[in-house]
Length: 108
Image (cartoon, rainbow, N blue to C red):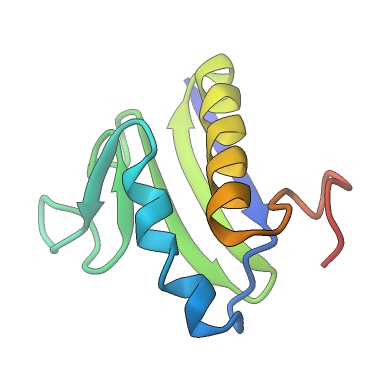
């Protein structure tokens, strides 16, 4: 397993109609656990997939100025499959192309 990271073009200042759909997107993804509640259950309010323990296979997300950031620890092949899924689901749910700005998939 290795550390993974990506930023999607879901902006921190997107309107409520975008952010209201983000939990729907999260729940459709493989490994969805929910939001951390503190202690052994991850950082309070942070979305997690696969594990709340960041020393195990996991993914978590945060809202950053550059977009919605995902970071995790997992095999690259599995990460690539998961990333493809979130881009497809988010594009369908939000009604615009969701991708990685750094990869040249979309404009900021």
